[in-house]
Length: 207
Image (cartoon, rainbow, N blue to C red):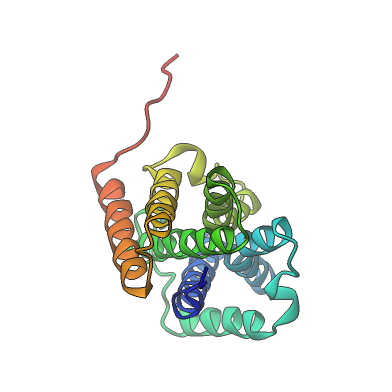
């Protein structure tokens, strides 16, 4: 399969920037020092992708390419200069919600593409997409002592799985190209944002 290098590179870049920003905002909100903010932003931006690469037997890109380091530094500096953190309630900060949603969807795309390229089964592709999409956010939330969003809120992980399913089916029917990936990306992003504002979530057990 052609790994759609253009969309893979674009999705990786978009996801890294978006998750680095959400990590920065989380770090500032929890009053971490500059080193703590960098660590949270770095792990949020690259944690899911690193786990993905290890699972398919590849050296994590973050360890081989300094671009990831420079990208996170650039996001932190720019966000600090623009005072992007000036919001009392992080969870309702539109910038945080949007960056987190973009990161989720973008990394779901990269996880799916890597899984398909590695010849994984349907289940393997879904797992890889889910881990890539949610891994960085889970690391971020755990590091600032917050229940990971993937476990509790807003149709979060479901969006990653639905997008992975759509891309896998497109691949199986020979219809996956850069345009179809882009369309699926924006549909999934819209679904994630709609779920957030409508308060959609999977059923819970009331006790």
